[in-house]
Every structure is written in C-alpha cells, then in structure tokens.
Length: 229
Image (cartoon, rainbow, N blue to C red; front, side, top):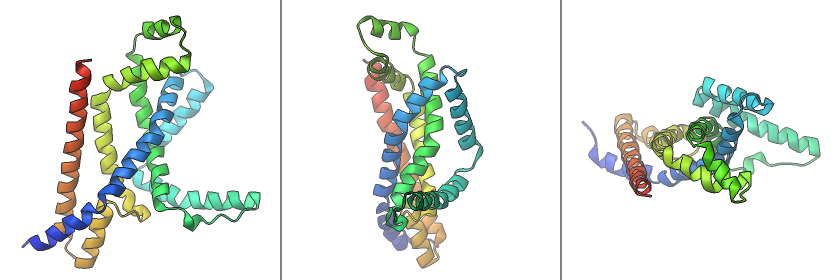
C-alpha cells in the first residue's frame, strides 16, 4: 500500500528543489540563447570554415548521451581549471566552485546546438527583404539582427521553443549526478532514507507533469498574444 503521509512529506521536500530546477533552466537559457543565435547566423553560410567547426560541435553533442556529457565534464572541468591554475602559477580552489555553476555550464553546453538549429530554421523563414529594409533605414547588421530578425524568429518558433524548454526541464532531472538537489535529487534523498522508491517516483512524476503543463500554458499565452500583433 502507498504511504500517503510519506507522499505528502516527500512533496514538500521535493518542492524545495524547484528553485534549483528553475535556476538551471533559466540561467542555461540566458547563456545559450545569444550564443545559439550567433551560431545560427554563422551556419546560414555552411561554406564558412567557422560554420564547419560549429557543425562538429553540434554533431558531438547530438552523438553523446546527456548523462555521459555530465559525467565527462563534471570531472573534466575541475581538472582543466586546476591545470590552468598551475600553468599561470595560481592556486585555484575548485571545491569552492558551486555545483550549480557546473550545472549552468553543462546544460548551456548541451542546449546551444539544438537551440541554434531552431533559430536557423526560423532565420531561413524570414524574408531577405526584412534585412534590406533595416539596412535602408540605417541599421547595422547587429541592430537588424537584434531588433528586427530575432523577435520574428522567436515569434515563429514559439511552439518549437515550448517543446525545447519542457525537454530542458526534464533534462535537469539528471542534475543529481552533480550533487545538485533539484526535484529529482531531493526525491532520491527521500527514497534513500525511507526505501520507499515508488512513492518518491510518483511524486516527481506528478511534479514534472504539473510544471511542464504550466510552462506549456505560458507559451500558449504568448502565442495568442503575439498572434494579434
């Protein structure tokens, strides 16, 4: 039989991991969006040498399981930081770096390639006359990209961005591998203390379900709002 009292306690405990989940998603997106947009602009001309390098990066991330990337970089990045510190004669305390920082870096790293492809598809849907019109009124390429093109790309790609964001929320469930106590991390602690894994899995099942449904509703609101613009 399910222990409903324990489920109630676990809900409260797992709710304590929502801020970490929220921060992982938001900060990762804030890091990834500008980089992904610039990558998309570069990849519009695949014959460029830089575009070919970026394609290798995209293929690299696509080819590896997320869990492997997490383990690889969570242990590799500290070694690189220590090596860099030794090279410049500085004593860097890697243990003073928060696990959340590693989370931001890793989730942004795996987010950028997919997001850049989303933006590239959106850019290809924008008529070239939009860019020419922006140039005709004296806008620079950067200004037209930020103020004219990017808002239209986001508007066109809102349904895809919604799916992407909910997938990112679900991906953060692996952050417990970096000792980050987000929703799944809190559930694993509760399960280890009680040996009641079924109840804990049910709790995180419904929590992710509710969170993702709410995110979908937010995106639908923006879709309706932008449809009238």
